[in-house]
Image (cartoon, rainbow, N blue to C red; front, side):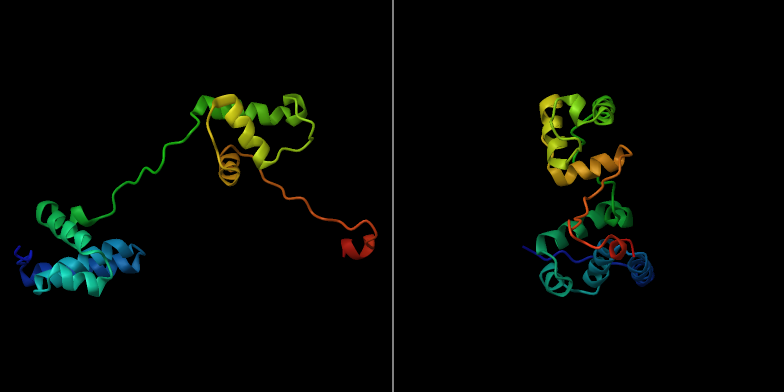
Length: 164
């Protein structure tokens, strides 16, 4: 199989180098790496050599070069990454907020304070969606609730010293 080598005008190489430096300055390191791959390939380096230099898989290098050939610089830019879709829709999140406002005792639990594992259990019981207790904290933050961690207070501690 013949190596993919791009033939670019020197002015285009200079432009891509400038764009790569700007991307790096802006913190878009992945975009900068992709632009560097195109420039170095145009200078005669193969995807195998680029993989070693840029510390990226050879298959990715080839993919970047192919995208550049078809789409130009736009093909190397970061696109929108949606991430995992939310487990609860807007209506369910509102119902959860109402449940949390009423408190754990009103829900039928014997504890007077909500905890992340308890809320994860309630979400699974009410909506059939499994949430990790650590992610429950993020969900609560988005709903406008604040998390509070208990402080340990020693029974025989000097109150004046603690206040200080």
